[in-house]
Image 1 (cartoon, helix red, strand yellow):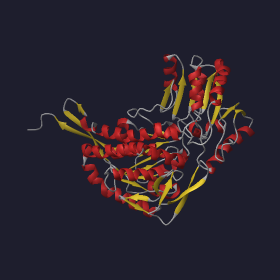
Image 2 (cartoon, rainbow, N blue to C red):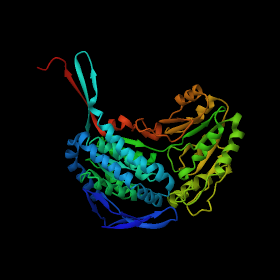
Image 3 (cartoon, rainbow, N blue to C red):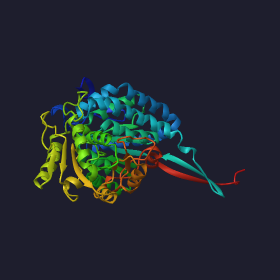
Image 4 (cartoon, rainbow, N blue to C red):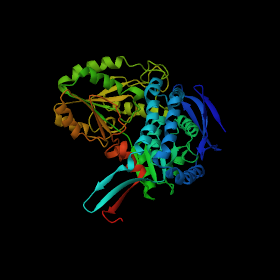
Length: 484
């Protein structure tokens, strides 16, 4: 069994299949974006390991499903407590592995991961209470476990976003095969140990590490999975969707975004400026980020001055430093992608208000950047950059604001700042987005639906929407007065 010390924490670099560690002969390298130094060589799964993990999940499914929500609840509650008890270790490994802010991981991301498990364990207890009366029958609505869930997770928040899938999947009574991101696989490995520590039975939660084109493709095309949930790029989702279509496997996709941040003339400009500066956090590697600033022309100069002041207070540097707000991009490959977007925009005549270059903090650090003079049809406006790069556009009235906001193929999120509730709600209703934040950002209520429209996703998760996906929803229509 292969293990490595990361940020002082011992982590297995092998798969976790049927309650045991499994090593592959083939490996792939894993580096820290903080300094681009090698951390470990990680076992790389292919079809053989994926087959073993799916088979283990299938064997474990009947007993796990038969426990019912009441039987699963204490095990999942112990799992949630184990996550909370090891929060600092998880946070430290995540920061080392993907360059995300340590302060954010400790204060928010890992506690939210524990809550994801606990919330869905609690919610499952209330699922089968539903009755729908009709004149002739009583309709008993059931949420029955569906089977084996394939969960493919992203690198920008691997631990928390994996629990966002694992929580409802296991809470529903399904078993799971997780394919962590190859650019940041290590905290999902820790998750397997914590699940075992909490008493989750072998085969219920399996982790297969590897490259997306190999392990991910083998999992997506596997004929014995019953659900597939994927968070990542739209292009990858199209490939996964094509694979799942062959077996009619239901999918849930949370994909990219190019979200508008709309600043109305009557907005609290100080609060809006701070929120806009926050779009640079985690080096802009947040699918929900409001990367397109749409500002009422009447307050454009005043707002930009306040925004400039807010950005000047944003520290770029080592994500382990509590004062840092913008850390590194995940890999050299991704750095070149972000840099390429900016270079092409500048060559086309777009003007940098600030930023646009590598930051002195290190090889993978990019300056917080604001680009002006953009046209709606340009690549920099239309495609997701996934870096600390925002665009600046102004509007004259609400009609133009909505036209700009909805003028991409995405529809994940939007942010609106206005002191008028009537105006804010009027705009929010017209924006194409799965989530619209009004005078706030990144507030996620677990009971609320979450997902994207257009090229930003398929389906909704959160609350009972998650169980709609991870369960087979059944209606039992019993004739009134027909029983002795």
